[in-house]
Image (cartoon, rainbow, N blue to C red; front, side):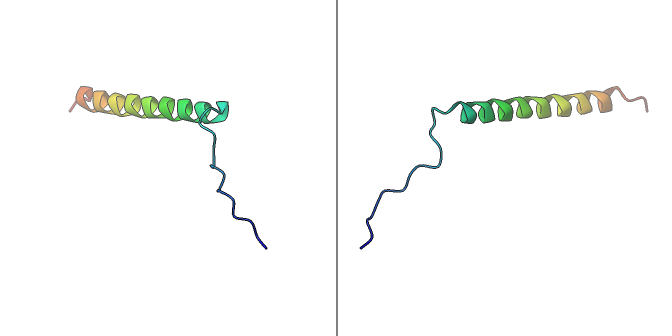
Amino acid sequence: MTTHRAPKPLADPNRPVERAVNAALALAALAGVGWIAGMIYTLVQWPL
């Protein structure tokens, strides 16, 4: 007979790996915003 167990959560929120992934995503988002701002600045300053 099989036993019915509650499924284990995929990741513990207190794990340092998850914090590192969240920090990397936040840095990537900031880098993307900075890149977009730089592109807009370049296009505005471009001599026509």
